[in-house]
Image (cartoon, rainbow, N blue to C red; front, side, top):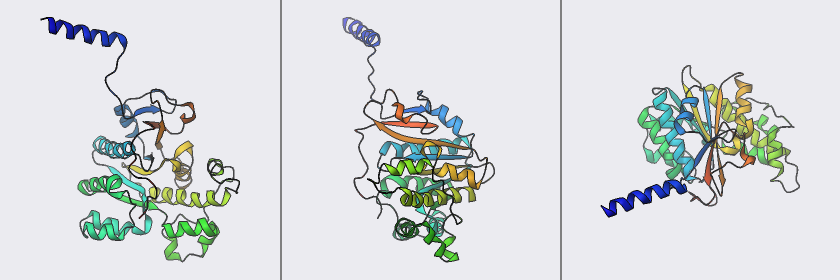
Length: 293
């Protein structure tokens, strides 16, 4: 009796002192910095046409939530979803399709698809879900050899590609706003050099991903796309080109941020996306260094 009473008093004391026994791995906020429930986010996202999920490439919480959000939207939409990702290049769509329908082996798929080095831990679960659920998965990114041309020789060099090669990038010329948010983002990385050339090269990726998303939109289906947060934050990047290729299309964004204390969202992250996953800065990383094989 005495033990039971002591336990009851302890619970009461913890409640009064506001002690919380949990240590969350993330918190979810809306654009204004108000904490929101996961299911409320899912209900909102299920009513849109496109969801851009911006990740930190080496963050395990972001990768876990990509899969969980996909499963939840699949349920909400009764299977009517399409998936796509930056991590798969447009000229590998045939290989991806052949694997998803069981025509080629996993060994052939992994050997030929130019997978990122963190594929096994971070993207294979998404591909497996698409395969098991018979969901179409879009390889949306510009082939890296053409991205290298844009980066090293300028985007105008893309005009010299063959018509066959141009099938795997956004229609040329790619519209670019010299006053865009992208210029400001790249400026902080260039150490005194002009950010314009690299920003244009980056835009070729955003435009290509947006183009293949819009090319694969289906009536009544929700398209969820996984990309680095850089490509969809601040109402720019992919989102801007989606409106160019399909004006009026409904888009919602998720982003990932990191800070020491996740109880309150830092003001610098407000309005980065419609929903913001805030992860502790000391969260374990899934890799260090280069990410592509």
